[in-house]
Image (cartoon, rainbow, N blue to C red; front, side, top):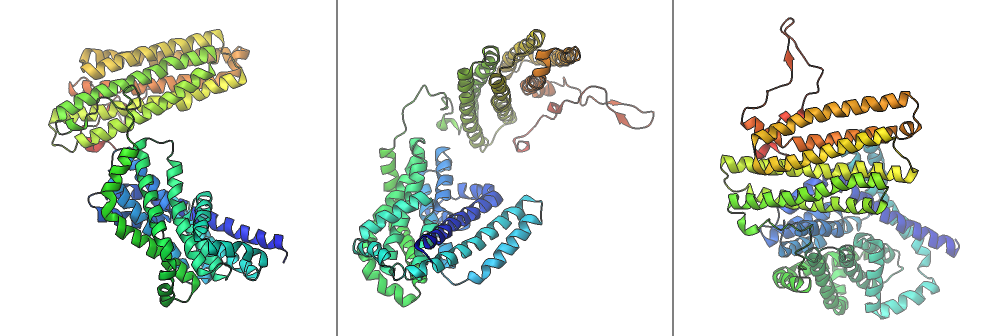
Length: 576
């Protein structure tokens, strides 16, 4: 076998190993990701509990990086403090060694069985869960096959003079070996894959076991670098956990590096198999990290807070201004602050709504980009308000406070949906119009402008109804909805008339025109939903828009659509 073929086989084995690791992680996250997030978010009552949960999640996902990103997202949302997040990471470092331990045994004979079972599960079911678990089994099978491929391809290198010219300097300079392994792990984004690769090379006799230990230390440092780089542009609070995790690994590696020759004879007593020695060293190192640094997570968390302080940005619209954590224990005060925050969110949505018509009118791509970014602000405020109200609802609430909490969540959710409709639908329609250089007919554009003006007016009325709870204004809001529906129907009929008359502009923009009418109608429906709980509480609503016919004992519908908004939630538990 030529040198090029040899390197190609090794590179192919490494690529297959990386892909298999990714398949396992993706399959587990798609099958149980939501459940793992919930479990991880609740495991912060004690350091040991957070440590154990981190180990379990990383053991399933087979990625300490994925676990780190989950912990970071919780910390950024205020769901967990930094110290429990660091405990989760110490556990994740241990949990990610489990697959290395399993694969250090010779179970290559299971590879065909895993692949066969995985393909059968993936192709034999249309349900998501079996398909995701099939993906995991295929990944396990490919991982075993890749390890066998790497070991087989590496054996001819055992006596290679060229390889020795690389291995010998690395063995003589362990620190250089650590840095090289850290770099390769950062490139591969997987410490598991890197350790398995080192294990394969030692098993093939290409890399000495002592050098393999140094490479394992580098792999652990590289695994800490990955989440640090991925959160580089995130908020300071989101960078504290990756920083602490990297600090643990870096300090641990520097302490362990001089002890490799001391530890090596004891690991050899446990097993003479080089692959088992690498796996045992990897696990022992991470257990030692947990034992040394678990009691020190408090000072490290304080250090992270000093190095990554929250920036003082009082004018940042994405940060809530009125959600005072100190007021959570006093529901009336907290709900008043939440109401003010919801109105800030409504102002941003109104800016998007008013601006979208200008994008259509002027074909303004720059304005389109600015409005799309505003949806990110809406999403951020929505998450903050939702989490704040969830904390408030844990207090004993009276009937009035409970109802107001439901109203706040419902209106906030509707505002978030309106933002999504503008961003994901109307702005995409505008982008198509700009890209294809289309123009609406004069009559069609007038209808769109009139409908948009009505929606803007409805939003102003809806915001007033939300704040005041006035029954008369709420009735006006629903009355305008009926007129809006009639106008939308008439506009559609006029558009069809223009199509029948062969108007070129109408034919070219027909799909865009009808989609705009549909989306404006959806926005109007979300806005008018604020009136239903107010009118329902006053007995101003009919129970149904169905007209009963008793001649045959059946109920038939009128020619009008049934309003889904009539189903008004009465309690917090009814909101998913």
